Structure formats: C-alpha cells, structure tokens
Figure 1 (cartoon, rainbow over the protein chains, first blue to last red):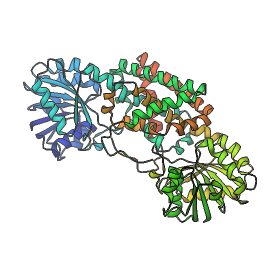
Figure 2 (cartoon, each protein chain N blue to C red):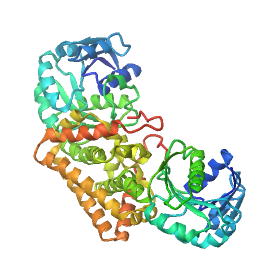
Figure 3 (cartoon, rainbow over the protein chains, first blue to last red):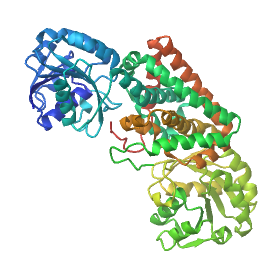
Figure 4 (tube, one colour):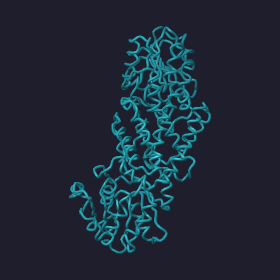
Length: 290
Length: 290
C-alpha cells in the first residue's frame, strides 16, 4: 500500500486509476492536479479524491507514487516542473501510449533521485474525460512496463505490483519494442478505422443510416479524440509508417486478387486473417453479438 | 400471416428466420430444406420446424412464401430447381449480401408465375451455422429490398411486411444502388478487417496476446467464413474495387501527412472521421465498453 498516490491529470485514465486505487485500498491518500478549474471542481469531494490542487508541485508533495496521465507530448514538461517537489526514492510512472521518446526524456526530467518506470495500460475508450472513468477500466487488460536498464529492480517490481493490483497483466519489454508492437496492434488499427470513417464521410449522408454492427465495430475507435491521437502518432511516427507499409502490402495483394479475379488467392488471404483472429486471446466474455 | 413459409438453407440466417417467424406467429407451417443430412437431423423435432426435407421441391410445395438462404452464387440455381414446384403467386425472397447479379437472374430462374423480391437483411454474425441462430437476430436491423420495376406493388408490400414483422426496418432501393452502398458500408469494412488480421498474422505470434478491445473490435468481422465472403466479393467485385479505390485515396492522404509530418492535415482527417462516426445512428444500446 502506498502512503500517497499523486495522479497528474484526472482524465479518463487518471480518474479511473484513482477510483480503482480507492476501491482496492492501494493508497492512504489520493491527490490529483488539473490545470482546468472545471475539472478540479468535478474532483472535489469525490470519495476517490482526498485533495485536488491547481499546482502540480503541491499535488506530488509527500507522494511515494506519482502517475502522470497527461498527453504524451506533455509528460516530460510536467515532470520537469514537479521535479523539485519530489521526495527522494519516489516512484514515477505514466500511461503514455508511446514509450521510446518518453522514456528517453522522463528520467532526466524527473531527476536522478527518483525512479521513472514507463507504463502503458492498454485500457481506455473512444470516450474521454473523467465523466467516463470507471474503477474496472483496467481489469484483465495488458499493461506494458518499459523500464530502462539502469532502473533498480526493486523500483520496477513495486510499479509492476501497482499496475497488477489494478487488475492488469504485466508485460515487460523495451521502450522501442513496445513502440513497434503498439504501432501494429493499436495505432495501425486506429488509423485504419479513422481512414475508413473519413472515406465514408465523403459518401452520401444517408448511407450512414444503413450501417450494420460490423461497420459499427470496425469504426468504433475512430470516435477517439483527434488531438490526443495526433500526439500519439507524432511520437510513434516511424514505427507507424512501417506498420502502414506492412498493411499496404497486404492491401495490394487483396486488390490485385480482386482485379485479376484470383479468388483462390483472395480466399487464402481471408483464411489467413481468420486464422489469426480466431486465436485472438479472449480476455473478457467475447460479445456474441451479430 | 402466411400459410407456409419455406426456408431453403437453415444456416445462421435461415434458422434465425424460422425461430423468429415461429415466435412472432408469422406462419402456420414452417418447412426447410438442407442438402446436408447432419443439418436436417438438427432441425428435426425443433419447435420452429414443422417439416424438413432432403428435396428442395418437396420443401416449397404448398408454400406462399419461399426464402432462399443459400450462398449468393447458388440462389439462381436453387430457384431454377424448385421452380416447377412453386404455386402461382408465391412470393420468393432471399438474404443475399449482393443484389445486382441475383436480381437479374432470380426472377427468370423462379419463373414468371411467381414474384421474386430481392432482400438483404443487414444481420448476421462472424459465427455461422444454425447453432448460432437466434430469433432476435433481425431486431432493429436494416433490411434492403430491391424489387425490379416490373414487380407488382402488392407483392413488394407483402414481402416488406414479412421482413418488417421480423423486427427490421425496410429500405427500398435498386439492386445496383444497393450493391454500391453495401460495397462501402459492409464489404469494404470486412476486407479491411481481414487485411489487418492478415497483416498481423505475419508478425510475431506473441503480439496477439497484447491486443486491447480496440483491435478486437476492429478485426471482429475478419472471423467470418472465407468461402462465404469470397462468393460475396466475387458477386460485387466491381463496386468493391471502386470502394477500395476511395479508401486508398484516404489512406494515401494519411500516409503522406505522416511522412511529411503534416500533423495539421492528419488531425483534420481524424476529425473528419470522428465527425462521421459520432453521428452513426445507434440502433442498439451502444456498448460503452473501453
């Protein structure tokens, strides 16, 4: 159990962490910081929030665990700002969807007397903001941890235990390998869903009314916040371009099979895809909906 | 209410129609035909099946409504085979995912003394077979009807009432317009999901274990039957190629925005996609899952 967990940025993920940590009794005290007065008001008096601050340094003072839940391009900046207020030995982690850039800068920004261990909980929603927070958001989800070689094992273990205590399954890897993996399994699917929605946006408006559940599922993530996704894509640009290249190769195969009426090749490709999808680990009761 | 509804092919859709028709009291008698002895055995004695036949002509004899639920490339052939056994004035409809080719041939195949009204209920599942059938499969879904200009209005109305009685919302259009629409809102999303799954199938196996709910939703439909989808794609090839061209244009925009670090253009495209997705009509309680 932590003495005080400070959550910087009580958005969907930050507030969900606070709710889950309170429910699971992981901290004596839960503090948070938001730049926005409106968000601070929303946190005040909540059972999962013991104190909310307009100043990030005040929020982290006395904390033995700090979780930065700000957009990826602001993590280093926020950590640099609070660094003087961090106690020696404080554990610092984050929820950023990319890890290479962050991990290269965050330890320096946070200072050498604390330990930064990058994390990426694979949980979230196309809906953002603390009004959609849920204490069960992390249950049975994957959490990547990307410690640097110099990080003490005890600090890594303590942060792993924290994420695990929220209900997550820990996968430890390097920041760069993490970025390659999520470029393919998270960022690529997001961009494809967005591209499909953008394609349909150019078509007659009434077509939208005929959408079945397949289209609804295929495009769901494209409802995500464009600014947030833009900052993720910016940070993981090179890996995403490589993932897009792999996808383009498969798409070219598909199109030439169709163009050449090579339905044997087409069926083989569909079968290969189905084979992969059928083995996708079911971490939750898979919806059996049509 | 119909005297007898004959369902040719009691798979996921056919058996679901029988269950729904029984539950909603749409027919005095429900008959079905399957080529496969195993499927016939599964239908025997079911409360939603009054008689099951090994011969399709026996199945349709006495029916005032016939629904062909066989793969799109077999509809005309099956109708031609049962044509001599159809009573004059019988209504014939289908569940094929494409309509142009089918509607050009089905009326001729079924004969001039009956009326064929093409239908495409936008319901289904990546799971096939009667074991996944459900009487609620059609509720609140779209059903396209694509009558030919020469079809009597009374026949079209009667078939529309049938699909509507299963809980569906009817959209009447031409066969060719139907094919253009579904190429974009159903076939394109399916092929993209399959292409994404095929892309990931070439990557390290363990990556699959890290999939979040976004990837799971984005790829869900790629679990569909490759042979079934191949026959759909074959039938609607030209419209699908055009839809793929539209998607490729958007994908090229996305890739060049990334390559050129034009994040303003990227965010605009994401915003356009989100705008389309946010307005997608919610026909069921939208899953609020992350």
